[in-house]
Each structure stands twice: as structure tokens, then as C-alpha cells.
Length: 398
Image (tube, rainbow, N blue to C red):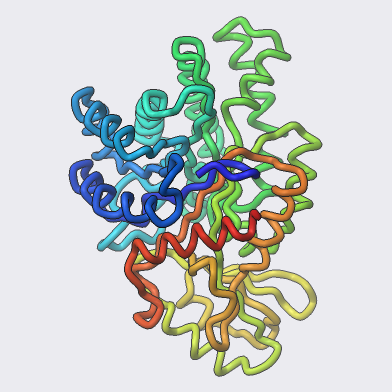
């Protein structure tokens, strides 16, 4: 949907389907109802998630033509895609496999290029398009600093191959698209500061030299191409779990000229452990489920932080020095608290306040994907839940 502060959509990773026909069927079942509730007389946007298998299938011209015709007939448009989860994302154990294959692999590189070729054909004229992606790799797969640095080197080289593709697609189609890298707890790039350091100190120098050599660009043209085609995905849940303030991050990005491809609007669980600690730790047990990683960042009484790879590790640990927990669990946006537990809804409000005051992206995407693993008393019909999420965000923007 068009809003005064950017195009607003939701990510279809909420719907099951790793094969295209299955995923398309869920879109056909849900999108007309959602649009009728939120945008009956104006175009409605979809943030499309395609697993690798679905991306291969939708690359066939006849299948893509059917999908484009359906979008046009229903007044729906696609401007952003989610290219983070490559394979299974529902009804299976995901955990750290959400990073598989990572950016050190040809598979991740080719999958992402394929998504951009599809997006180039779906993207409305005059709009920018983006594909969000993983933060290079999962840091605990690498056993030493030397291995980690080698992974960063290979990942960066592969991302530059995608930049090549985007430069060429802009030349041949006239459409501007960007890869939006999404920091996540325990990724190699796990927060805004690490992304900025990698981008400014490593990616830009390496990328400028690469484009000067391969495209005969001037240093200025090479830098502008990189800033245009490789951007940040600002996932509010992830930044909140890292205790990062949106205005500070946006100011740092602006100072360096680094751009934000999209805001993924999502909320985490927050627990104030300064009182009723035992009751709250017992309450969080109902969120311990076996599908997704739920990293925990604890803030200690002295202001330092302690990180846990998953919720069971945190609940089994020593919590006597902890004042607060923030947990990577995408809970509904429109709920501020869950009994004894709170959410980081305030971080969403603050981020959207910054966006309204000084817009730093054109793309807004709701990304609550954990409906199927929420405690039973929080689960509602999926279409109704999506409508409520988007309506809440629209209210914040207004």
C-alpha cells in the first residue's frame, strides 16, 4: 500500500510453501481477503518470499506470466522480496539452518541473482526494488578468527557478483534494485555497528577496486553504484534485541551515505528481570519451541551484555546479574505486553517516528512469521492477523 511515508506490505514468509504451486495457492487463498480489508480501492503490495525451489519454478516464463496476470487482475504489486531463508521455513526444524547456504557458497549467490531476475519482471515502472538477505553467515560455524575473516572475504566477493548483476539489470531494464543485507543476532554481521564497520571499512574499498577493474568505473562512479545496489535491511526486532537506538543508527548511516533498502517491522520479547524474576522466567517457557532460533541478549546490572545462542541456553544459565532480556522471537506488533512479559513495540514506534520525521527508506514490510509456533492462546486466523498487523502500522504512520 502507498502511505505518506513509503510503500507498506507484509512478507509472505508467513505463508507455507517451498514449491511455487503450493505457495501461490496460499497467496490466492489469503491476499484477496487481506486487500479487501485494507486497500479495497487502491493497489495493494506484497512482499514476496520465494524458497529456492519456488524461485526455479517461477523463473519459467509461462509460470511467471500466470502470476503476473493474477497480480494485475487483483490490483496487487511486488516491490520487495525476502531472500534470507533459502529452503524450508515451515513445519521443519530451521534453527541456524536459516543461514544455509550462506554467502560463502555459489548456491546462495545464484539463488539471489535468480530472485532479482524475477523481481525485475514484477517491479512496477518507476519503483525501486529490493531483496533482503542473510548477514553473510552464522558466526558459530567458524572456529577461529582466521576462518571468520576468510568467510567474510568470500562472502563479500560473492555479493560483488550480485552487484554486477544489478548494474547490468539496471542497464538493460532501466530498473534500480538493491540487495538489502539484514543483520541478525549471531550472524557474522549481527547488529548495525558491525554492518556499518564492514560496509565502510571493507566492502566499499574492496568493491570500488573491483568495479574499477571489471567495469572501468571511476572511483566515484564505483562508490555510487555500490551505495545504490547494496543496502541495509533494518529489521526492528533484530536491532531492538541488540539494544540499538534507531536515530543513532540512521544518523551513522547518513553520515557515511549508506542507504536503507527497507525497514522490516517486527517485534521481540522483552523481560524486565528486576522484579518477579522467577515468575517471568517460568512464563517465557511457553515460547520455547523447536523450529526457530530465539537468541537472547541479557543486559547486566553493570550495563554490560551477555549473549545466548537460543532460549534454552539462557533459561539454564545464571541470571542473578541480569536486569533485562531481549529475545529474538517475532511476536505480534499490536500487542505491547503478554501478561508478565513485554515486547519491544516501543522500538517500532521510535523507528517509525524517525521514518516520519526524516524518511530513510521507501519500503516498509511487516515480518511477523512465527504465528504457527506462538502459544495456542495467541493464534488467530492468519488473514485476520495480517490485517490487524498492517492496520496497526498504518495507524502509527498516520
